[in-house]
Image (cartoon, rainbow, N blue to C red; front, side):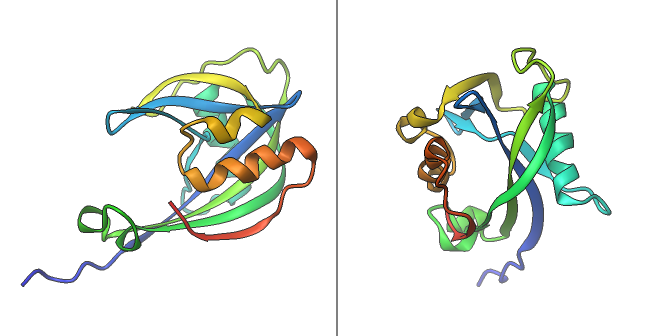
Length: 159
């Protein structure tokens, strides 16, 4: 009988960087699929989450951003989803912030891209629902930013 796995909680911050009706996304190839992710990553000990978002965006995209407000809080508890056998020890908590670029938003190119990252792209907010944006649960809330009527709050344990 296998020993039960005790999940380790990892906190992170993601950024919804918006400029002129577009959102900045990372193009990626993850587990053999072409997809998109929001820029962001793991929180360092002693680092406030808004500063995590700012640091991660700069590292991955080269942009300096202003963190405007918290949009959503998302959890991912691996034992509750499709890959429960391999992700039973995964428990992520992500703070997702609305951000605006400082300076020229066209000057992209970070110095610490994620291993799966294949590029960066500004995408019209209305087109986000048709993309393979991971996690899928973020597609509609991000698209709703185009109308200025996004819901905010706790998204739950979603993939």
